[in-house]
Image (cartoon, rainbow, N blue to C red; front, side, top):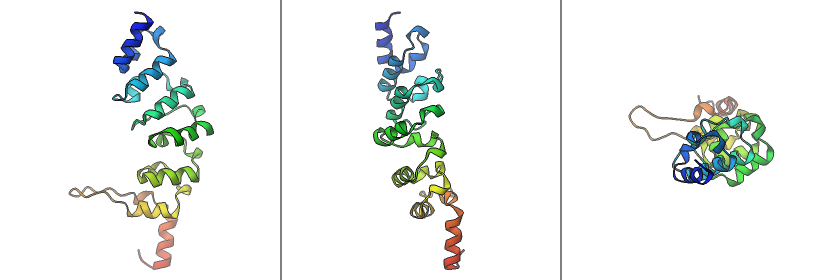
Length: 170
């Protein structure tokens, strides 16, 4: 096994990176595997590696993939610059679920929840605006039998109490 053969393996089968001998586990190969393995989940590609040891560049490559199940990055990864990178370069907001809630800002929450109200369950309650609360309250999936899903449980209680006080309705 040599570097050229390792690179060919990573290009053809990115999920095999963890099966290569450890001397071929390089940062550049991991990034190449993440970029080449679009049909694979990032967790499958980098699952045997310590995510807490990933640097900013590797985490950015993972975020660019926009996998549904973004791995939970180390606390030190979540800098203002990294979060701004995620907001500007990710094609979706799947990283939002794994970011520490205390790093959320009002501007970020407004953009993300206006794009997808489903992320309300990962949002700090005090950052949910009245308009987003109304959107969440009104949202309900199509019904299939008795299975309906609603985001009403994520609406801050004070909005519901204010509504009841103003209208007298339950």
